[in-house]
Image (spheres, one colour):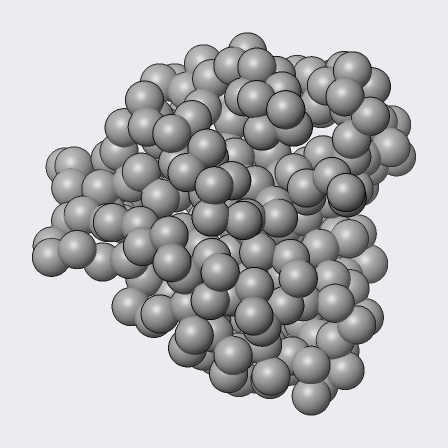
Length: 252
């Protein structure tokens, strides 16, 4: 049986030191379990709740930092794009181009990502069902994408809350073989704080194990050595030192 896809890293590029710390731990875990965790981090959090929130170093500097991680640690890279023109430069560094959930119906964005020839990971919008994801998937496939993944990250549940309908996982598995569970964004409380999104990382392991029970073939974790000091998604990032144990349980 093939091992699942694992994606992990900080929400946003905060510093070179943070990227090194996380990369070193991912390399160690890869060697321990014989897996290939993909390193993720955003160069620009373009959809922050507040204009005052930290966004990241930007495209040019961010890609330079991610390329350095790829070169020095041999890790595959995933990062997200928000505009179609970003696909080409990002595709030269990232192995996987991620489409944010809010933007998963944006045709130009999907087409541009598909045309790079890279793997495209499309996050399911909080307002769509798993079955609805056949249309974003088709846009990529018909635009030349060689491989497309779909990611579950929760659904809107009234205001400032998300709920996960795990039936979306088998529904999306009928569309493509790689369906990833975003175990950290799914515990968010969108815009529930004072100008920021909150959440509860205590539920991340349970989200992962429930997704396994429903047949998920991949897992996505935002991790940080000190999440409460993180500059984005602090409340829902998993502590870096807890990733090893959780991956071990998912592989058991």
